[in-house]
Image (cartoon, rainbow, N blue to C red; front, side, top):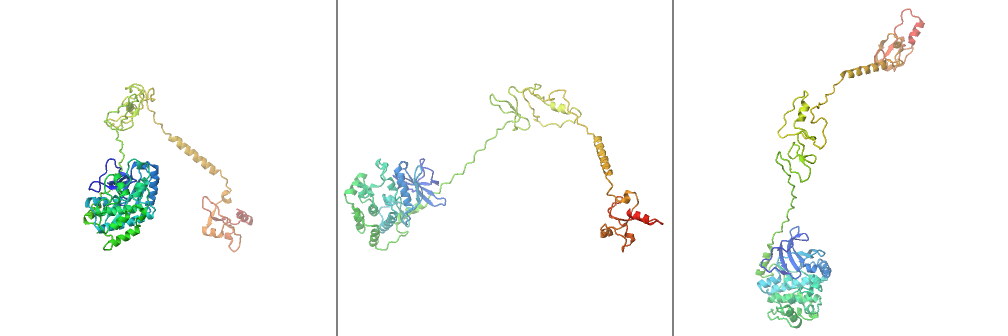
Amino acid sequence: MSSASSTDPFQPLKADDPAVVGGYRLAAVLGAGGMGKVYLSYTPGGRPLAIKVIRAEFGEDPEFRRRFQQEVRSAQRVQGLYTAPVIDSDTEGAQPWLATAYVPGPSLAHAVARHGGLPLRSVLLLTVGVAEALGVIHGAGIVHRDLKPANVLLAADGPRVIDFGIARAADTTALTGTGVSVGTPAFMAPEQAAAGTVTPATDVFALGQIAAYAAIGAPAFGEGPSHAVLYRIVHEDPDLSRLPDELRPLVSRCLSRDPADRPALADIIRMCHEISPEPLRQGEDWLPQEVAGSITERLRMPAPAPTPPPQPSAAPTPTEFAPGHAPTPPPGGPTYTPTGYAVASAPTQTGPGTPGAPGAPGSVPPGAWQRHAYQQGHPTPPPQPSGFQQPGFQQSGFQQPGWGSSGFQPAAPRRKRPGLVVGASIFGALVVLGVIGSLPAAGRPRHVRQGRPCHVVVSRRRFERQRFRRQGPGKAGRSQAGLVPGHRCDGELRTQARRPPAPAGGGRGQRRQLRQG
């Protein structure tokens, strides 16, 4: 694709140029040609890209899409030092596109048109670099088919071959017969112009044309109408009179009409080294100073287009009403009356028709609720703020019981009956005491049930030591013979009791009776 016609390498986008292609925001126009247009863009990391957007007419051709997909897949395998690698592509979209690494340098066509032919050393280094690039391209199974000065970029460290394989996608499509030029006739091979046969030797013929163009500053077969140039290519010899003598044997072999007579790429590189009076080494000084200045111009690339920030959705503006003025109802709809608590409060809906006047059924006169609620000895309510109005439930044909009638009296509060509560409490206490008194006395000691006195003489420690067991007469002494298991004596805690001393003169039978007690 050709460069922009203006001296500025970066042209601004026009109205018909897309702003984004495949997610890449376009920054400028780099050039245009028969296949489409080239734009400058950037990767997310800031590396520049050259995005080639194919013309919509080609995208509508199914055969072109099929060939384009094949060539793009093949081009992605090309990784040479003198080629621009393919970074991204879209072969199925409405407009196919291809993104390659951006090369900051003018094309050979632009450099020659601006500064004239190149010196011998620059031509030899150019020929060696393009021959090496073609070797990598042919190794991937691709024939360039459209090698011309516009597709050779002059970078600071050597030439770069671009657009390889794209011309094959447009070849033999329906558009080739509608006046769309898919190649430059001045740089076509005889077999390509006559019969359309394309082989790697076709690119060798184009390489000889490029070397002659770089040396003399003009095509070897002259310029003019396309059909005249193609006729000279097929039937006449090239004009190499202005070509340096050192380059004439090499260029003559490359421009042979018979593809079999053209040299191989390795032979071309060898011949260039033999022609050069000094070893050929690519470096930053391989181009003349005035051409190198064009590279500096292309290093000042425009900044990436900023991504527009997302626009926040506009919030709806609330409708405001002046205090004391109700909103205008829609025609034929129900009437709404604000409640009075706040201007933006929800309105109270009334029945259809004319709003109720004071005293009419279904309406409450202003202040009526205050008079009826506080006329029976109740304290006067505090004054209400200005604009306050108690909400009224206005419904057609409905009337609140008591509201709006002069005979309405509020219900008196119910009096409490404390006597009933006290009586019930006393009755319950008596019932509990009666139940307790009726319990059987089986658990009480015998002397308590018989009403006899009890003397607590045994301590708790002794009681726990003897474990509630009665001891007969023995080593413990007779004073311990009357021990009884722990029992309750007049509310005392469980303890041990000793029988009371026998009265004087008591017999044996009386002691037995006391022991049994």
